[in-house]
Amino acid sequence: MSELFNILSFSIFLIALFYMPFFSKGNIKINKFFFEDYNLRVLNILILITFFLIFKLLNFKLMQIITIFYSLIFIFIVYFLTNFKKFIFEKDNLFYLLSFFIILFTLSVDLSNNLTLYWDAQKLWLPKAIVFLNDGSVSELKNTPYSHYSFLGSLLWAFFWKISNFNYEYFGRMFYIALYIFALLNFLTLLKIDKYIRIISLIFLVLITYNYWHFRGTQEILIFSFLLILSKYLFRLIVENKNTTFNVITIFLILNLIIWTKNEGIILSLITIFTLLISIKEKIKFKIILFIILISLISFRFIIFKYNGLSIDLSQDFNFLNIPQIFIENLTYSNIFIISKYLLFSIFKFPHILVSLFFAILIALDKRLFRKATFLYIYLLLSIFLITFVYLCSHQDMAFMVSTGLFRLMFEFSAPYLLFILIYFKEKFQI
Amino acid sequence: MIIKKINILFFLILILFFILFKNTDLFRNTYNIINKSHDIRQQTANDFCSLFGSGYIFYIKEKFKLKKSPIIINSFNELGRSVNQYWIFPNNYKMVDKNKVIIINFSEKIQFELNKYKTLDNFNNKCLFLEKK
Image (cartoon, rainbow over all chains, first blue to last red; front, side, top):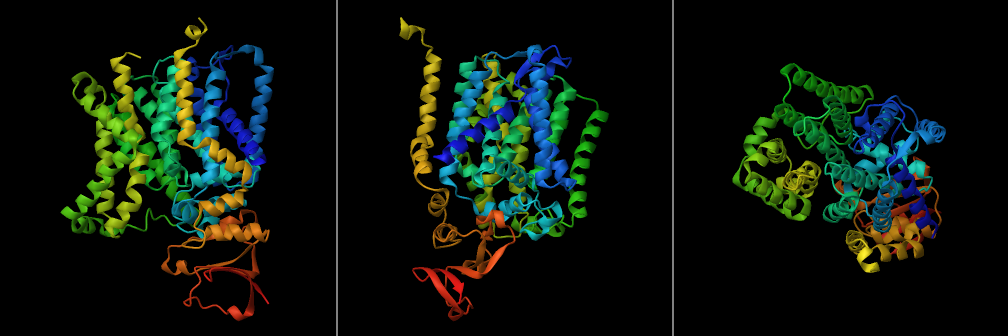
């Protein structure tokens, strides 16, 4: 019974963290835009995760980061209580909080009973999390298998495992669930809909995307959630052309987190920025600056790895010097058939991809809508092309590689596809 | 009159929540969490005495109330596919009780001097928990 109570209390803690600040606006002087549609909450959680990462890169121990975290929470509470009368609270806050809580608690109970960890999680991610849990430094990761892999997910796992005070690793994974639900809820704020319809849409999205399979300790769900948050700002920037500075800052904060979560996040960030650069109506100078920022973020990641004595290999499954030769050797009908077969299977394995592609076809039939969603088609084609290309460049056994990795790769790339559904409803019903 | 006043959308939310509860087996999961300890649930969640054998390690941890990890040997590891299961004892990272050994997937291939150890637990001669004599 005590374990259930712990799950309950930790769910409340996570919701409070994701829902901060609770107020919408008041007498404080700050850009009105920040208070719209969860923007401040998104910024809050992204900056918080970035701080965890920076403190860890500066070799702070996990306990020290936790102390800083609690100090920040304390300052916020003091500020919140002393300025309480100045704030205006959204009238629907409680309704959203309650719905968020019910979903988080339900999925956390599922996690707590299932517990199974995937091979990758046991071999790659959990050992890294345990290093951090025991106040190990980044350089100590070289004693773990696959030390060349990015480690943000393991850091978050360790942080929330430790902060929970409940000795079980799955409390760290509860953060993944909270981030996933938050990303879905934030995504739905693109639609101007009634609170009941928003929650109905949220539960519907959870029903078509949730599976314990995503929470077995692998990192794809983090990439999926980050990309889903990013999708909203990509939409704002490209389709609505709104508040460029804020959207660009948010996009780069997320791209940085993606780069530090998984190695393929580097490739993913490149195709995202490529999609952005060819879709926004900005001066070429501005686009070059954006590209340079991304390259700097990627370079910084490699420099930090080198500095800490970690391998800067992206993957041991690839021989980067011989990629053109391997690609040509692998470019056979049978290999393309295997990849296509699993790509097709993945569409049926993940209902949200199937539904998204259905709406992609509907949008393609409408010229006006198609023009608005062009950037999504570019992303869709680039992601599928990239997945195919990556497998064709591997010198490992194709069937084994594809059967063990393609579903997960397809899932993590698929978050922006959901914009097809959203754009269709937004334009057809003017919501 | 009352029925009319109740929001249909609110009822739809309730129905969807129940579908979510059913899809994720909320009530059965809750029952299991209340009635089975974490380590017992881990035994059923993982391979018990095959492949990684994590379930067996949790079983031994629970049965003998182990705080430190014993040495863990898994013949499956020879294929390079096994994982390092010291994560099962996360609070005593890098601290291994060298007097105790768990062998998973025991076979003749494993070069191990069994006669120097006494057997504390034996599961089908395949998974063993041993202590130095």
